[in-house]
Length: 276
Ligand code: FES
Image 1 (cartoon, helix red, strand yellow):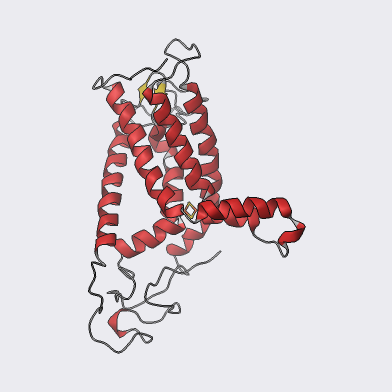
Image 2 (spheres, helix red, strand yellow):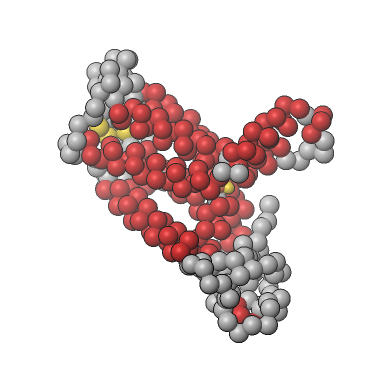
């Protein structure tokens, strides 16, 4: 599935000139005639993504405070190295102790966000200004869309979705394990249990609302009437898909918050309220 980068001011074929001299642009010298605060959305996107990247990078390399029994941070789940604290998965990697367990797995959640159709639009606009907003000319002279390296690599998105679905199962598993207390007895529920559960639900909604998921469920069919179950599933996924942007942001903040909550518990900054 090859797509082209979003072009808010209209379709321009790959290779066409861009910027204020674009061949299909209205003959105006101004970069834009818009008078609203069109720059606000890309600015907020930059701020939010930079904050998330800075925080998640720090936590991934910190290699500490990611487990507060019975909770494990989603940044470190599944924890698969022999140095993992509180892991419930096979610890088959025996790498050097200074390599954080998060670094072995983060490429997959990172990959789905990086190649996500929504985030592509968001960061093409906010970081590359291509274009920064609808009806605002971009500074670049050339436009090749996603037809060449490295952006043609965005088409691996569906494979990151498959990996994300596996991660969804793992995060639900860890959330269910959080119904046990420190001694392993079932029947515990603290605020951390709910935080991990909410995080698993939000990330699941982000995955199933994915454009590739919608295509997997309802694509390559000539007639929906002959596939009523797939039509039903496609209709449900399509409703979620309409809110994919919202799920993208809420789940991003949600996963950072879940990690932060575990960090606060692990460092003894707060204690976990217990409901039973
Ligand atoms: S389009 Fe966003 S996760 Fe697939």
